[in-house]
Image (tube, rainbow, N blue to C red; front, side, top):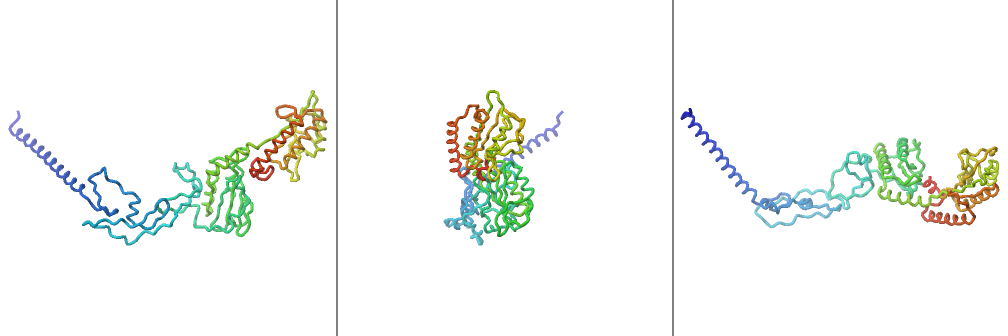
Length: 433
């Protein structure tokens, strides 16, 4: 049975709980009113020097960086430092005003630019977006920036550093390296790494007060700078963005290790130049082939071929083909066996169903004269050996056909000359290799 004591204790407990709840509600209401009173009043903003009310939160705006700069007395906007600006005069208020600054940050130089020469790491290393080519990036405010590893100290540009080094910026992407002090530096690993990129590489070094010279793996003299070019296009196609990135990355690593600075041209411009150059080269990259083919089942005798070839000035090379060479020993056109077997010296006991004359158009100087010599030899071989001269499609070639081909050939050479790529020149030989 429930005793009277238990009833009294239960009533007391209920009353105690009700009292606690009532006290908590009273305290909560008191603190809410106090908070409302405090946050609905205006207060002086130390940075802006004016009263800011937070009662209407919808109308409250976070001060911009420019407003903070104005309060400090200066502004740096869009990469240009403006004259110091004083904060707008505020109407007198009974509240405390911001005391004037006794020291002002040094005014940054006008036209402040940050020169980003290129990445010191692969862009895909950590997912960060880093500049990948030389460009000028305007910055909004001066920030302390640690020096790049590739530049140990400000290095003055040596006199004559940009003198003609022999590299060809029309067909090569040329990067420059300058050292803080002239030094004898091993370039073996650098050159080997650059060659593995897959495009032709040329490197030049400059001695203090001397002219440019081809760079070897172990220079014997101290060098103040390097110029290294990678070819933008060849017969394998245009250079890729990955190849340019690899090229610059190797140079940055080399300069960081040797205490130098690297300058790489704009990569996007280089890519466009490479694509344009490659398209043009594809249009004029022509190989003319003519075949002296036997007819009526009569094979061509090796003795006759050898005699007629040597009379025309051709020489038999180690690869088993005949070549007409210029005074520098470069091939003007070739004559090879249409079948797999190479020609033999003298040609005794050798027969074939045909010989093929080949003329590499963009690699030959005075191409029209060379074309005339090759076609004349083809017609002469066909006449003497009672064969026929045919083109790549097996159609019989006549003198009228050859004249039409000659006119088209003249047009190719005119376009190459207009582009600044003379047929047979060093520039053409590098492009069409």
